[in-house]
Length: 306
Image 1 (cartoon, rainbow, N blue to C red):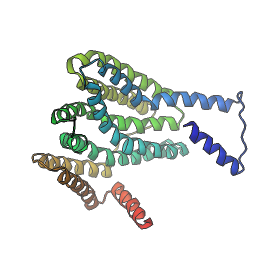
Image 2: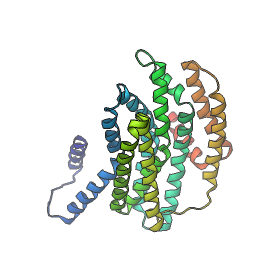
Image 3: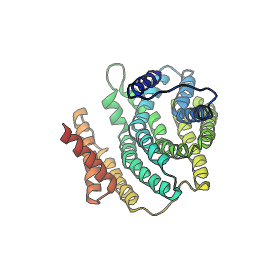
């Protein structure tokens, strides 16, 4: 982070931008205040992971590794899709002064979020054993380890949609400089996670730690959503594009469950995953979903550049 900041300062100076730090400047004070609150809000996943790993180290040998493997698969869709969508939405939210327009933009961002996160969640949930075997199994990582990791991942995945939504909704609050609300929600999440960890980790092992993390995410979303509704930052209205995405994901569930009944080699499993992705995109293409068309347009542009 420091290196990135220094590089930015260097190129800004090359472009003719002059800067000087005035520590008594009210703007600088406001910056550090917002930076402090946002750092707490954005670090929720890291804080929960540290707490989980600390308690996992007190469990039988191998618990830490199993928890880490499951957590990596849990974090991957969140980082690639959930946090990415939320991060790109922040500048758009920040430019808008009209609350009604901001609510519409939030709905658009929410559609993008579920477009990517829901199918990832469904496939990873139903085919978690097969995916873990594909990625990790081999050598000292046995089939028994795969089953243990899959069980922990199951409890982690229960909270994945909520953490993705929390990332987006927190950016909405940041856009109006309401960092304190996100910080309070984060404190609630960490507190619930710690309490539930202490209650569950001896009885359920690593699965209890994963379940505590998911339940903490649900509590955080409820807390943040109540504030968002009270401040009229969000509103729930019928949206045909969201319905199209939800219907397609229901169809994806049926197809994935059907395919999960059979055994596959690693190579064939990769083909199955590609086919599931193709089914999802093609179905939304038939439904003429706007998010799907947007994704395909970006994909076509990338192909043309090559």
